Length: 187
Image (tube, rainbow, N blue to C red):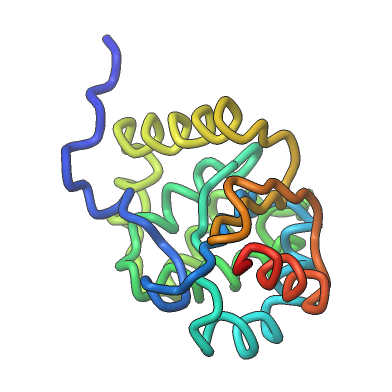
């Protein structure tokens, strides 16, 4: 039996992002929570980008799951309230060696521990990890990203603004390179 599509208005699949909704440039980041390049971008470049571009209203960054090995992590992250998503995402990217690549540990158990720190109890964690509607929605979003933007690696960014329509850039970006791309998209 096929899983039913997510309910219309399913808040777990609502847009997750940072920056003003009316920013002139919208950058969509396709990422995987087990991608070391994504983790490096969030660790090395994101703090400066948040301060100079997102907090100032020059751009908005929207997160889109391209989970590869991280489907369960994406499902659990989306089960959290929207206001906890970005911080949880950062925690997962910063601790990949603990939950995603630790051969001495059970990755699901480690992920559950991190989710508990974010306020998601074990029952809610188990429910999120088993939610076939959410799984289907995330995979559908990944498929749409692949078809629409030819996403084939993470991180990949789609820049949209007056000076750019669906400009795809793959790979981690320095804060300076990211700012140049936002400026070009702004026109």
